[in-house]
Amino acid sequence: MGGSILHDSFGFLENGDLQDGNKNFTFVTSYVPTGGPHPNRDFGYLMISGGGSTALSSYKFYPDFTKNYRQITYVKTLVRDSSGDLCGGHIGLSHYDKDNNRIDLRNCGGHANTTLSRDLNAGDSYAYVTSNAGWSTSATYYFRHLCLYPATHPDYSTAYEYTRIGYGGHNIYYSPDGSQVTDAGDYKLTLVQSDNTTATTFPSIGYSTPSGTPVMNGRAGSTYVYHNYLRDYPEEWTPVTTYNNDGVTNSNLITGFGNDSLSSPVYSVWRYGTVYAKFLILRNYTYRTGPNDSAFGIANLFLGVEAGDKDYKSIV
Image 1 (tube, rainbow, N blue to C red):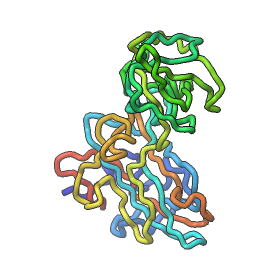
Image 2 (tube, rainbow, N blue to C red; image 1 turned 90 degrees about the vertical axis):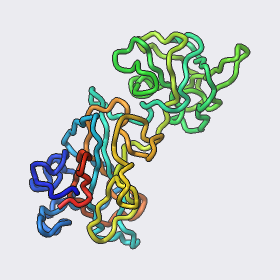
Image 3 (tube, helix red, strand yellow; image 1 turned 45 degrees about the horizontal axis):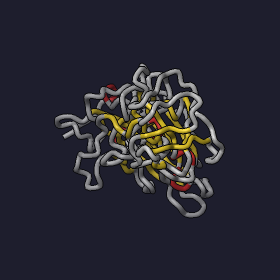
């Protein structure tokens, strides 16, 4: 199954096999032309020294959302840090909407999905909602966005999917007191600034939000989608894949849309609103607070459709 992958059909990340050096991957410390994972077809590897920061490819990949995808990246610790730790960290994709905005988990529904129980207008100090289930009471403001889906908005009207109203286009926070029951039997959210206490009012968003408008609790989480996370990179070339740990089960494909913090398994969906994606690596993020004097390599950066007998367990 799988079989050889030729350069022209290696995958959907342009120059993922590195035949063209570090084209599209200029964030690396250097391109090393030999010593890659497969001696019989060696196009070298990308070396990254240090770490603790985000890096993105310049190439944009536009998925066919009717198909299932698998991401594979080969990794190798080249030099341990001065504390003796291996390199390690987060590899995956960064998702963007049609307007080139990066899609954050706070833009994606799934937490406290409910509706406004009363009209919400610019200048109001409170938002009233139908249900009190799922509203975060965290002391951290970025877990307490009030996000809305106005019916007349051309892009953000699909309930509990993608919206930038509440996070992105407008940042709207409610108090860490959470949802408070009222005498009428609905629930009140007190609108505050990001300091958690200073009262504020609902902004003019340009769209009507009457009773019945879908709302949700936008919560921060993984900034990106880590399809190829591995805590520690071994000292020999190792493929990090979206396969389950048994190396056989195919359940961890990238398929459909959702909120990846709520998907099962996690990181197995395109975030709501995705139009295109870029290759993403958090450089040595496992040990970002360490000495950051290590080095690692990545190679065979692959993203492909899994269908029929194409399982890509062996990229050669």
